[in-house]
Picture (cartoon, rainbow, N blue to C red):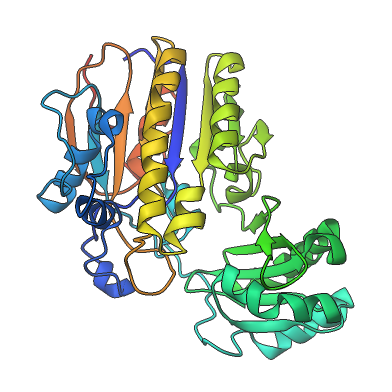
Amino acid sequence: MQTNRIILLVLDSLGIGASADAEDFGDAGADTLGHIADVFARDQPLQLPKLCQLGLAHAYQTSTAKFPTGMEIPTTLKGSYACAKEISSGKDTPSGHWEMMGVPALWDWGYFPDQDSSFPQDVLDEIVQRSGIPGYLGNCHASGTEIIARLGEQHLKTGKPIFYTSADSVFQIACHEQSYGLETLYELCKLCREILNPLNIGRVIARPFVGSCAEDFQRTGNRHDYCMKPPYPTVLEKLITAGGTVIGIGKIGDIFAHAGISEEIRASGHPSLWRETLAAMDRAPDQSMIMTNFVDFDALYGHRRDPIGYGKALEEFDRQLPVLFEKLRPDDLLILTADHGNDPTWQGTDHTREHVPILLYQHDLPASNLGLRSTFADIGQTIAQIFQLPPSAHGTPFQIQD
C-alpha cells in the first residue's frame, strides 16, 4: 500500500459498545452508536450511508455481534474496518488520543472523586496565594453548562473564578470572557497546570463564557486545554523528527501539549473544522499527516445527553464525506476513529468506556475486516510502518493487502 499522506479524523466520543472492562468504570451496557440508533428507530432510522460504506455498521457488529437498530446495511463495502478496545487506565480525551498515537496511559491519573469540596484545600490555598484571585466558586463536580448557569452571576459580581471537575482527571475553570478577561483566564490555567503537575492531573481546561445573566450565559469557542505532555514520543513526534509534517486541527495541539505538531489550526464547531481540514488537504505535502478532532459530538451532545442532537450531527458529518472523498489523492489514506465513548442515553454526564471504530479508506484498496484490535495503538503502529518510523512499544500494524 503506497501512502504519502494520512488524514485522520477523530469523531470525538463515537463509541460502539461497552468494552469488557466497562463494569470497572460503571459503564457496563453503555453503547453510544447503538443507543442513538435505538432512539432514532422509534421515528426515522439513523441514516449514515457513507460511514456504513466505510464499514461503521460492520465495526459495530464486530463489537456487539449485532447491527445498529434500523440502519441500512450495505451489501458491499469500500473501506476496511475494525473495532478496538482501550488499554489506557482512563477513558478521557488525552488517554484515547495518546494511545492511538502509540503511547497508552498505563499509569493512574490523579482524580478528584469527592462530589463536593472536591479539591484539596492546600492546592486551593496555593492557587489563591500565587494568583492573587479574590477566592473561588464551585469546588465540586458539575456539568459545565449547569454550573455556569448556577454560579455565573455570582462570578460576575465577585470576580471569583468557578472551579469544577468531573469523573475525568481534570480541573476546569469557567470565567466570563469579557469581565474576567480571556488572557487572564489562560494565565490562571497555566499557573494551575504547574501547581497540579505533582498530582498527575491530566488536564486543566479554560472554559470561557459570555452573556449577562443565567438565562443567556453561553460557553464560547475559546476553550483551551492545558494537558500534561506524553511521557514518550508519539508517532506525531517521530514523524516530525523524520522530516515529515503534522497539521493538528481543533484541539489536537492542546491534547498533545503542542508536542509533535508542525502547524496548529484552532477552529471551533464542525463547519469550521471541516473547512480547515479540506483546506489543509490542499496544501499538505508528501510525508504528512492531518489530524482533526470533531469535538461537538462529545461536547455538545454526549455530555449534554442529547441523543437526537448527536444523531443529527452524525448524519451531517456523513453528508460532508463526499467532499472529502473528492479531495483525496490516490495515495492518501483516510482513517476515521474515536477516542472513547459518551453514550447520550447513559446516566450522568461523563465519558463511557467503550470500543471505538477504526475505518480505513484508500482509492482501489479492497475492503477487509480487520477484527477486534487489542489496543487503539494499532493505529499509531500502522502509521509508523507506513512512514517507516521507529515502532512504538505498543500496538500491531494492520495487515492491509493491495
